[in-house]
Length: 481
Image 1 (tube, rainbow, N blue to C red):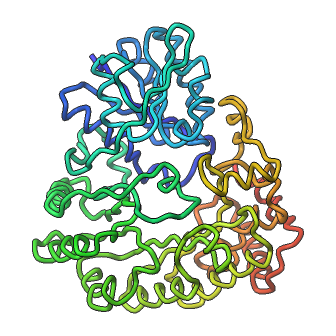
Image 2 (cartoon, rainbow, N blue to C red; image 1 turned 90 degrees about the vertical axis):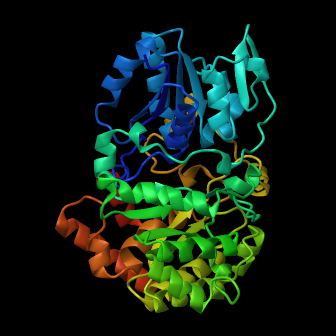
Image 3 (cartoon, rainbow, N blue to C red; image 1 turned 45 degrees about the vertical axis):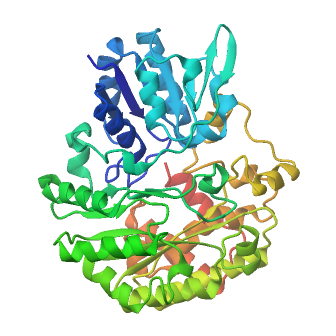
């Protein structure tokens, strides 16, 4: 009998990379429960077509169901929760993940949600599934006798004390489609970026040991279904402890654990004494083929405002260093922050232009619209502009119904140039990149229509003219489903 079920609900709009990815958070929780002797199963609605049938077959005998919910999963999470209650009214429906963590009171107020986990979920969910008294479990808010009771926050646990990823808990169909193998060597981040979830929830940096990381890689290399695939260290920042990172990289080479891998890094780490010429050469030798940077903005004013603690020139210099050693530099950007002017946005586009002109290898993600999260300094500015977040899960579900990642910027009063912010990701994706790359995008459309759209985007990018984005609105209406 499956006593505990963990579900990743489908997102409201299909994304091309879901089939080749995996729900790392649920796998980590499931691995911990399994290591403690509990029977657990994962159903991934974002990647398994028959997820509803699996839910229907497994829920009747289930006592606890946990759902990991991001904002654009709310509608499907509610539908799944309703189905669970219809099949097994006594089953405890437990929500966790980023959205419930930020909007705890709204989430627990919904009649389909019995318990909300906030913060890291491994130990909390284990105590729930073990039947411990709710009043003694940290990191939850729950209902009892018509009252809502919120317990204290759970302390962050040490990832070195837990096993990493039992692959036998993942459906074979997901592993077969997996293109990028996930690994996690650390959690949290020591930096202070005001927009970041880690800074808001005070998710300090904690690491697994070098030997644990190497043992995990040995297991990965021994699995036939991972043969020929690349790996991503999904750390928020892999290089926080530079000596630890150097030991891992050197050991990959010395112990013949080389495989293609990628991870995250800060632009200001590319310097003497940290990631210098010698270490960059070792990164390449160990199999590193891509480094992902959170650049965020090209405006010094905005970078200072969000406490990113980097400069535009450091962003460009990091790309030059990566390209020198044939490592792909990937950069994520955002726009639409409170107080950001059009001039600030144009500085971001200027840095993107400098990057893409260096090499076709440079990858740009975004600029995506800024997402306001409660608890941050920026969130208070958003509220001061007259904005009010949705007040219930049902309202959230309605507002994000046709959105790819979060609320549309048309809802944000602090954004003065809404059309520019909303369309800029498309203009960078199809206009800033070369024609071959733009046409190779996974966005589905007739080839001729796609070519026309790409050519218009390239012209706009060349002229830096982004007013009246009529072709973007047509594409969003008729192409993005």
